[in-house]
Length: 129
Image (cartoon, rainbow, N blue to C red):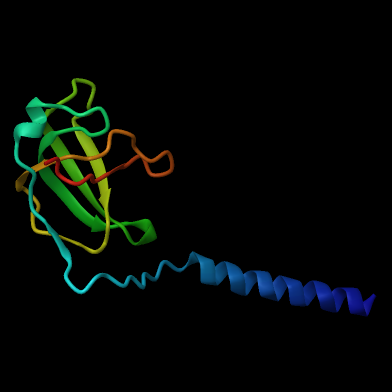
């Protein structure tokens, strides 16, 4: 019986250490030598929508680091290539992208249409050519 209790205690200790390690969100991202710089797409994507992307002109409300080492923008949508877009949208983007826009700037961006089922945020797409 003491042997079973010892094994149970060891397993419990291992689980608690593993859970603590998983709950930390330290990001160790290695980016390419030159960060990709993102400022704006041209505004023509708002008039010419794409099946996979949404052309959006919006005001940056918030910029923050998010889970899984992504960055997240909160945008107040002023104009969009689709009618069914909510007035506020969250957009995740790669941590290696150097975002130049600041809060209160108006930006032209193209996120992918489908939001993530886990976060509800869309993902920033490259500007159309």
